Structure formats: structure tokens, C-alpha cells
Length: 131
Image (tube, rainbow, N blue to C red; front, top):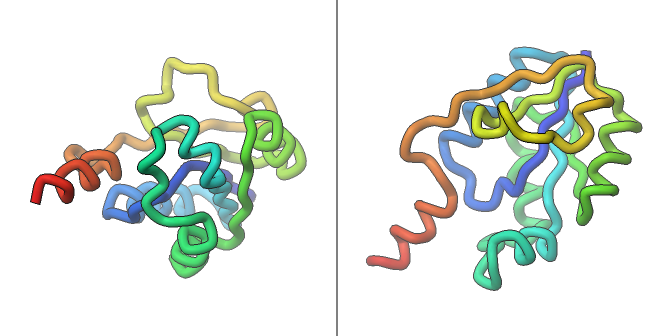
């Protein structure tokens, strides 16, 4: 059973580890797709990502729940990856429950993970700049 999740995974925190663990508990083979640096910069601003794609990829590959890592720079590329994989399950954060999920038409099932309160890369980076 193939699972799929995508995201920035910029500054890894316990929320990331827990969603990847949850994803792996619901599949045999987990594929993670990472946003490219350019895509993150376009959506989150010039100060992001904090970590470049090669570093983020290496960190994600080192997490035991992850079997494969890919990257994408556009919505169309993301759709193509999902279409190619045709995952049995896609994992999304709870905040996407009532939103249009890119590529969801190619997944057999979507599972939602409830975000851990207080864990957010944006908040971590904002708090670190206050020090």
C-alpha cells in the first residue's frame, strides 16, 4: 500500500515527525514530495526557505518512516507525481479538510492529521528572530 504526503518540511519539528509517523502507520511505502526553494519563496516570502532543498531532502530521507523523496516546483508537477504514483492513501493536515487538495482525484483515500498545537515552522522562525 502506497502512501503520499507533500510539504515544505523546512525546519523539522515534532509535528513533522508525528505526521510522517501517522502516514507510515497507514501505508507500507511512504513517498514524500518536497516543495522546491523557489516555490516556497513564492508562497512564504523572501526569507524562506530557511533550509535549501538538498538539505531538506537529506533530512527527510534520514527519517525512518520515509521510503522515497521527490520534489516539485508547480501545482502541475505535483499533480503529475500524484497521478504517476496513484497512492492508496494521501495524508494531509487537518487544516486542508475543507479545501481543494491538489491531486486528490488520483488517491484512493485521504486521511487527515490533526496539527499539534504550537508547532509551526513559521512560528519557530518568528520566535528565533525575537531572541
